[in-house]
Image (cartoon, rainbow, N blue to C red; front, side):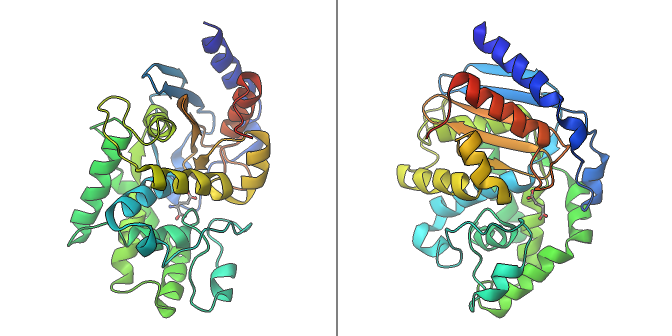
Length: 307
Ligand code: GLU
């Protein structure tokens, strides 16, 4: 009961900040979101679920897909292959920035949580065709989010493909340095598709619960993320998961987290629970403005910070 009250209060606390944010418009399909949507969900490692606010509202994963894709890439080809084409350092720059990519002679992206890094990481998702590669991603997403109904928003995918020239620039820069090989347009297509997968706040809370539960699916007991890869993924979420506000967020909330411009944030409370928040009104860094405040409130009230 006490926990339920804390979640309700966190939601109301976050709601006060919504008017200071704006929905993303650079991907036209995202502009259709209602800035007043707000939700918080939690799934504990012993499978208790909590859901408040617009918890049934679907949104596209956007950058949260970067976490799933990194896990799938690590589990498929191993860390040496993955990190031969992406680094482990935060940039302090916006998620779609090209500045640091240009400065490294090989054009190797700094980390898997920025767009360039995620485009590189996704090239490791196995499959002979684009369809097979996306299907592998989708099946893995359904499993790690505990929801067999998760699907693609074709409209968002097309919207991203039509307007994704900045990502195209990043990808061609990486090709010029040899980071990307083969069809750049196919790599981009896969990236746009994985960003356009629809989920709910509960789905991302479940993802958080797997990462909280030492990489083990809390229902089936399947080890979806090896202990070594779990350490890598959770560390990169702490250092790079909240765009160029990762330092602030680590200080104020102190949990491995990843946000997306669709308004979702997944947070991991190790050994306890996954938390999903959703609010499409974003702050100037691209993080859900109400969502960040909800997590600040929960971290403070429940003493959740890892640090
Ligand atoms: N699909 C988005 C893009 O590439 C993802 C951005 C994000 O959520 O950070 O711009």
